[in-house]
Image (cartoon, rainbow, N blue to C red; front, side):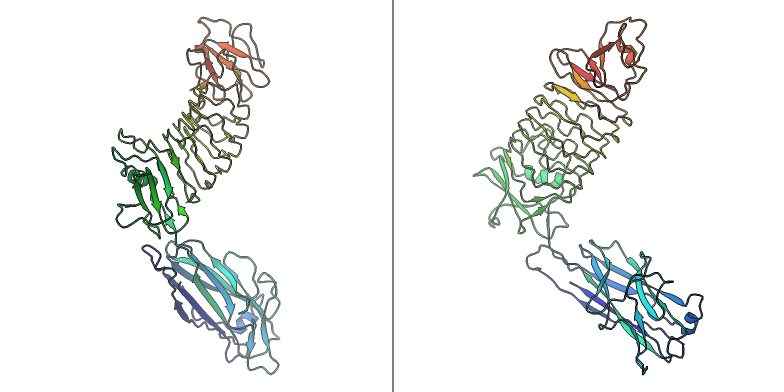
Length: 524
């Protein structure tokens, strides 16, 4: 761990109200290598720091004779580090004395540190303080015993990181002549860093996992090994280039298990973890026989893309995602699509506050019986196309918490959800939707109980002798009735109209069509 310390001497010399303010710079570097023997491809972080205005002269008379009797001395620290967890910069005096001391004064004259936060104009006379460039008020000078963190980061700098600091003081006519000095110490140290095992990108992992399979050796299980593989075993590396540890992957044909091993208990999944277990590629369906996936050692806190992550894992019957941190995920499209044999899925821990794409997220999960989405935050989602398509066995779907204000596309959102009894969409805000929803009419007898956003636009034409919400019926009907709309809550009545009168489809209306054998709710 490199440590760089700057010492700045604040010195007033030969003083008869003439202050000469000098900055002296001392630099020391300490480098510590922690756990380097255990870390793969370890790199010692670099840290460099410089300061401008290394020698500043201040004329005391000019300060005293200024309008407010104040001065502000700007400093800039330039810091550059490759340390992955950034740096911390602290400030303190060399000793526990925080005043600028006149060493030649018989009375012990001092320019004291301020004792509380203050603007430059409100500083008490004959005091000094400091502030960072993003602060308004000045702070007390910290002593050796109580150093203050002035700058702190959590990741490596992108080039030079320039940080500003001001020293401020206020002087009066009654200050005793002489030389006043103290020393401020700026210390910059890299933050502690613990090496991480980071998985390669999802598609690269997928390709390497598939490559383990042969015509006679298929993968049925995926889990972490508690011991490193023997040297005689053929392994493949699946760590990212930024990983501090190797991650080895191999197939044990005796138990049909793909094992992975790394020294740390935790493996951080790649930011792009899309298609990790995706079985379809180039007309091959390798890894389609997987029955069990152990994800308990995965840390997903940095993942932004989970699209197609489990797509097509048709033989999985259980999937435990209780440890998944999805707080940074933006793309969940097709994440669980075509998981044909999954009957239960607990997503109660999912944080979807950053997700923008849920296209086909649950499409073709034909055996899923229930889906609790009460924890979902959909405020940033723009695409919900085919989100629940072909969920043939789901009987209830509570979307009352869905925020659809930013959704622009809902095409096929409920297509062929044929076992639903009710579907309440009265809370849907479809003001930005350009492609509207479609779904399967929920019941066999065509009594669809679907609540729509209100109000239904007034330009919708209804059948003769039928009125609702003050709408005027069409004067003539020239074609057989084929399309129906459903009124808003509390209405559940089917209102029918010739198809030609309903085009173009209004953005906030779901259209129901009587086409056998699939009774589809069709949209734009």
